[in-house]
Image (cartoon, rainbow, N blue to C red; front, side):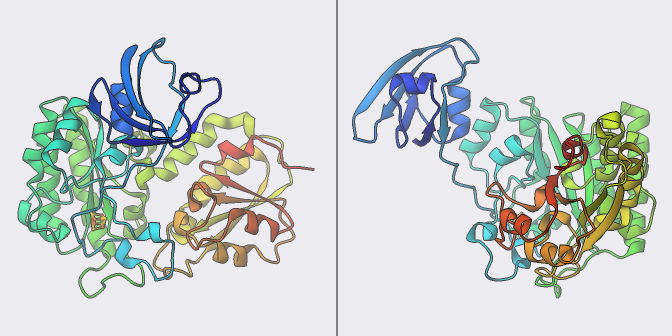
Length: 425
Ligand code: SF4
């Protein structure tokens, strides 16, 4: 059963008399469990929908509608699938106390992997889930592999019953499912020869694995430092050498680069970022893989749309990881806009200075960094630093922040998305 949270005006649902609180029970006799069932089972032109209205009345509708016309309901969010692992590097273990409850949920959900590109380990799949992945052809999936050696993977996931990943992927691949994969690299565990083997196994698996990124393990002040550590520069350089070797084989054999290192891996290694063409289609940019090159491309493409900022001063708030790379982005941005950019790196006061990701910056730390800045015409914040309710990770609201400074603040994902709009006079 899925509960309706809103009915869109002038929609099929409104015409049928569905309302907030209506329970969607089944389509063509098949019970509905979540948004996936709803979307896939109602994809036909004609179907029978069985509902229970908030008053308890059960009704069956024979629905006939032009293909593609939405039914017009919003659904309650699906219950998140909990993770079956206990990785030493788990970000949830690295959270301080007192944050919003939802942040402490360890999610590992193949549905979110398909829908939003969240990485999932697939260790909590039941047979029914596997059948749904195949039936609904949920592809591509984003999969955290970490290591193909089952013993090492189980150790990394702290899950002695984790199924072997290669046969698991094989079953799905045989039904046409494709994968983007990642390896979170924990030094001394899955780097070196293990990394080499994992890259080789995943590449040799065949074209169903579209690519593989290597991301260095990231810890906070509260993480389990007695069990796991971040990689040193030379370990990151060794990983880059393996990635680039695999990428060169893939380029030669398949015409794609296939293996990528996260930007953070290059920063830690002290090695210059590779050129944009090595990221294939930037499929893992949300995972911090090729972010800088992607931003540069976005700015180049937007070009003339960004003009009109001559002489204006724009503050760019970022975490310390990106701060090192941001000059590479601000240079083309200055050329395109004519503005003067001030980089404002913010230290993460909530998680500790080792957490350098811009998306995890607390609102309080940003507010402190911007206080006293009366010289700015505009400040740009990383778009991912607030959630759908416009709250920062420390629950401060974006609205409160904007009212505490004398200039406009905009949330931006790639600069081009907000700098085509002139600042208010
Ligand atoms: S898979 Fe590991 S890192 Fe991800 S939520 Fe589970 S325990 Fe945490």
